[in-house]
Length: 265
Image (cartoon, rainbow, N blue to C red; front, side):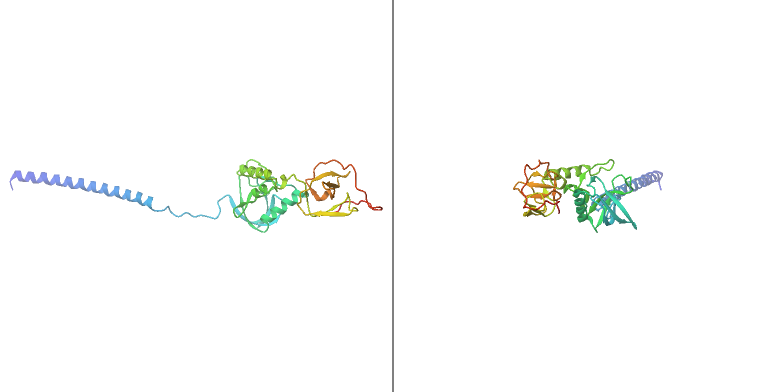
């Protein structure tokens, strides 16, 4: 083989080998780019991996109500124990008052015998060892419902103020609508008889149903009886939101021999 041909053959083979290597490297780079692009495209097209979703998050615990203590406290069965739960952010009247009894009754309507979800804010318990929680029945927060219906007041106690704005708004709504605690109209606390004078010795002249608005104009000397605008009298213990009215200037006459008696429900 001529010398010049051999030299040209060797140069051509070296250049061919270099081209092959360059081509192989370029091909590998292109394959890598395509693989990355494919992963990115698939990542956008496919949904994210399924997440494990529990019925409640870490703030919530399910419990069974076993007793309604008052308007803002219940006892629940939780982790094999009976535990007291104090509603966060509200304050209901104490038992022993008409408002307190009404608040407890309404709380019972909302939660008695129900399964509830207890939502924690910041604090775990109060100084009495009661759990501090927002109480939910389905999608209704009982704390807010009691305030919105006028059976409790909004009462913020930092640091547990997650729903402070909501509870304050519910109270404003109750006040504007004069519901519950904000009802300043005198009403019959229960069905009551009306008398011709301040005492059961006076003849019955009618009656009013529970919740009836009353227009009170006067009282007797001890405020045991109130006189209505039409002249009839009602026992003071049967009136809620009784106004401060003057004493009657004169009282009806009794039937001869009759004596006024103390008011009875």
